[in-house]
Length: 139
Ligand SMILES: *[C@@H]1O[C@H](CO)[C@@H](O)[C@H](O)[C@H]1NC(C)=O
Image 1 (cartoon, helix red, strand yellow):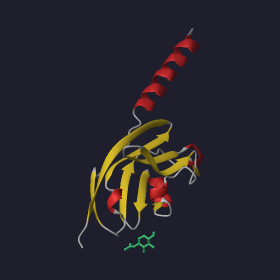
Image 2 (cartoon, rainbow, N blue to C red):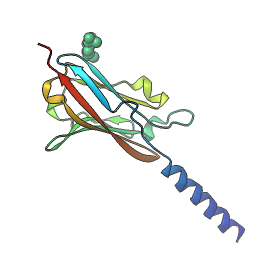
Image 3 (cartoon, protein in one colour):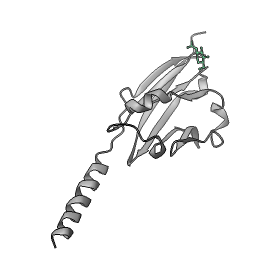
Image 4 (cartoon, rainbow, N blue to C red):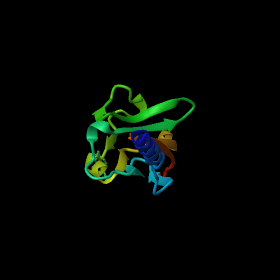
């Protein structure tokens, strides 16, 4: 009976911890100049050392169709499913993942990059935030 109670307490705590997994976007609006580089940021909780193999990071763009911008599944990059709009122009700054920062760099920003992005993170729990990118044509 006591064991059952402990199990219930354990499950309850575990579920609450999972529910506490939240992704935050320190900035929800970025403005980049045409042709420049932009780095967008989402943060997620990491307790202790990051278990890279448990981490999935997805950056996607919400256009008429959903476009995969950057995909990391259980620690492995999946560049095949990346949308051609972003090929060769994105980089996840991996050294920052240890600190719970998912930093996506898009280089040589194009006008069509403007729009809404989702940063999804799965690490125990899962959550996402939306970030708006504006592109300025200064020429
Ligand atoms: C933009 O990013 C590219 C690729 O990471 C890099 O080669 C280039 O130096 C960067 N440019 C600036 C202005 O930071």
